[in-house]
Length: 289
Length: 275
Image 1 (cartoon, rainbow over the protein chains, first blue to last red):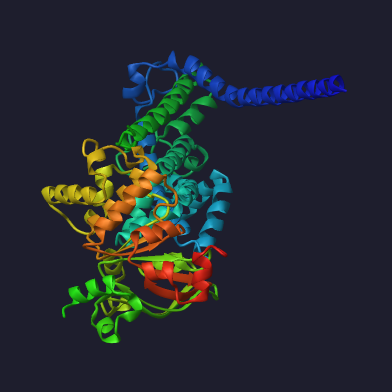
Image 2 (cartoon, helix red, strand yellow):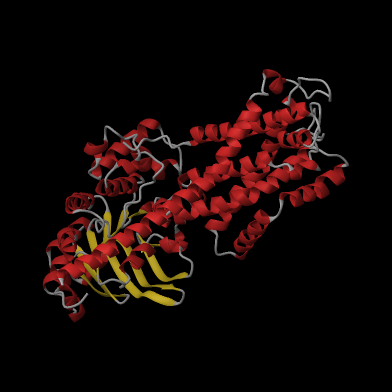
């Protein structure tokens, strides 16, 4: 009798162990599949791109077909300008909309905003480009950095709004009560206690939005258009790294293909460095010990 | 007879024996008249009229769901945040209707310490204490230092924290965090402090530290404490109010409530027949 039970429990135990091992293996494999493309993209871009990088790439304008050398200086600066313009629109609007949706969640308008941002985040970016084209390019009668920045800003809004809302939701209600009980007015409670507590997650959301905007090509094709020279004004067409990559990549010239790879590598590095700087600048200044 | 003497009188005499003349003379810090709080139409407390004495500790006891916390939270407009909450009746602070004050003014006069320690996680110990001050107006650095020291000493946290004021508040233990919350409340210099089960999440040592603080505070402040722990009510309070099913059943001197309550309901609860 005793032997029988021992046997049963032994087979049960081993069966459970096998199940557990299989599940664990499945998870590990899935994790590998998830990071494999990322690592592949990163290494392949570095391999292809880093070799074509030189100082001229950062300081010189693109050279015409047939001439070697030249760089993407105007496109690099252009991307910073476009993303900067986009951030000027996207961050304040997204942030404040997120605060409104979470802190005043009972109002009809808040629910409407929530629904619309969900829809907006699902809209293909090229449609947003068309929107910016209709709103800014046609009335101004020209492609411009402003139109490109506007398109990127619209693109950033839903991401920032939703992450802000989600992060604010995680701030415990008791913290708001504590602040209010000290006689701190509600708007100050929101800005200086609640927002500050959620800042880590919100910054991640903003960085994601910036990274996405920095790599967008489609909405820039018919808003900022591209420029082989320096743009002297925000109402002129302006070059950007993704559009430049696109133009170089579809060309038949070997030299331009190499430049496209270098551009891709630089773009990845910019996103990475900007994230790092923002993280370092906004980390919590108090140690826990 | 001046007020102070009358207060003393009441504290020593049996509560029921104080004549009405004396009762009227006393300055009540907080007073409610037929206070009713309803959430989405369901009444959590109904028709509560109570007078809470200054410079004394009043404990509010009663079984779960009897409206103790609801009552306490109504005293500093905490129901403002809750959707569907409706407060009717009058609340008077120093004989002045609560609605005549500005809402943030009431909250500064009436501090509150919550059940779970809730220091601001992104701030240092120092910043936590001064949070309520610097977000309302500008202070001199030296003045702030003074207030921080005074508040932490009064809350019984100074010795443990004076060398690490710039460290995150989350580095403190649960009991220390709760004392920090008390210090933070004291810093804005309230007149009345509400405690909503301040020790129910703490260990016995932290609990006794906080009870000691309560007794110290009573000299300068009016204290109302909600507690589930009847021994605690007996230890720290001068007056005890018993709530049941959203109604105030009895208010009296703590000794009287615990030895010879007037109401049968109170007696049943005190003797542990239910609740």
